[in-house]
Image 1 (cartoon, rainbow, N blue to C red):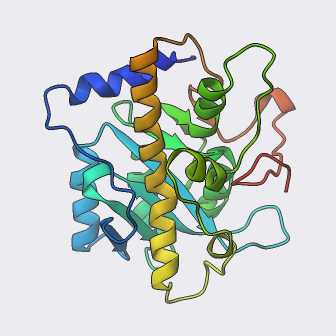
Image 2 (image 1 turned 180 degrees about the vertical axis):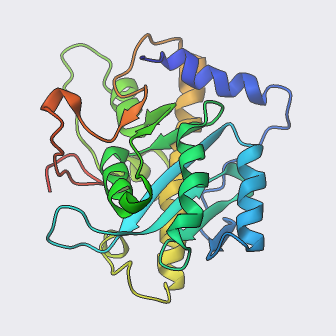
Length: 254
């Protein structure tokens, strides 16, 4: 199933039409960040409430860079708009208690999931949770990189560019993400305040970019189809089920 840009973007505008307009917060100082270290904590209960009232979320994951195919995911970030960003510490939370809630989120038909090259994140998440069943799909899903390419390079004869999330943030939001923190040791505890803030911004910026593109579509007219705007599968069936390693933030192979 392939969703149209109109459906994915205008659907969220319709859902907010009867609500007070909210402003996405890109200031890392003001952004509300909740570190979740257990499923029996107040932060996890707040996350459950936030997801119950959200129609779109930003998803991201972090892991320690290693020279092997499937590193263990250490952190999962879920950005829920005005509720803030929930940074889930997978090294503190028993995976057995988190698998079902996370699976329900990834498959919830009422919540649009935003990501940036999230197929790699999904592969590593599935590997991390393999003893509990893993994850094989995210639906509905919209890739911010594909939206950017579609809206910025829709003119004929203008080549599409594969840009990193940090570059896109600098271009459309006016700030970039720290490459140094991206490559830091996410398996080391405790996480630093800088790591937690970076992780939160990494997920929250997806919501900011989505809002800007949504406004652009509404203002300039409709588009028909966009690649990577349907279910996100953990395996690429067109490549015989093989998983290809790619750079998470940019477009070049790792």
